Amino acid sequence: MTALDADRLRTELATAGPYTALDVVASTGSTNADLCDAARDGAPDRTVLIAEEQTAGVGRLARTWVSPAGAGLYVSVLLRPAEVPPTATGSLAIVAGLALADLCAELGVDATLKWPNDVLVGGGKLAGVLAELVAQQDNQAVVLGIGLNVNPVGDVEPGPGGLAATSLAECGARTADRTEVALRLLRALAEREAAWRTARGDLAEAGMLDAYRRVCGTIGRAVTVSMPEEKSLTGTAVDLDAVGRLSVEDDDGRRTTVLAGDVIHLR
Image (tube, rainbow, N blue to C red; front, side, top):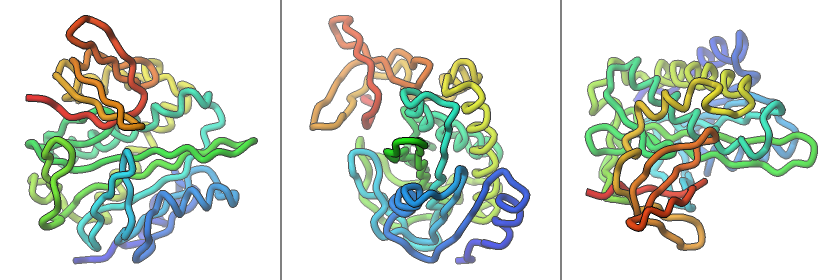
């Protein structure tokens, strides 16, 4: 498969903006882990790292993400949103999910979002997002990792809820050129993230809460949410708040607000 055009990506995204730096590597364990280390070493806001292959990609609840060479985009972005209160940085996962939905719409793919940020098409999983906070005393940093299947990834084990992997190519996208897809994705993310930052992390003020509700396939569904420390919650997903937390109502009418977890849509 054709390699990513690193020079074009840097010219169009880093030299002229909206990103500060962009690098493409042939293989790494995890782009998120690499950028977390770079953040601690002082890497600047809006630094991008893309890998042709990941050998130790990680998703939510420490699940592995299959990242074969040439099949997808494995992208991490380091953000230093000083304008946003630390309590609101968790909504970045919603921002990334919307950027992926924007990309799918551009490419003619009818996608929905499974809270907080998995992208589903026709019952298969197309993409996922992992946001990691990098603890620093004087300059908060968040590393946002995106794994997007552009071409078929082969025979991989289904994810939680039996979700099989799918790809842009299999979904009839207008292009499966990975460089072009990367350009479109990172531009969509930059636009969404800038609006989010201006709104100080408030999704409603940024105009993204209603946008997310329109493309979210979780709201109104019966769900089970797997949370850290092997906790789980079953009920109906009823809504999101301004920082992207999910409200789940059980059979007795009690509502629980979930900040992070892995959702399974129940039939």
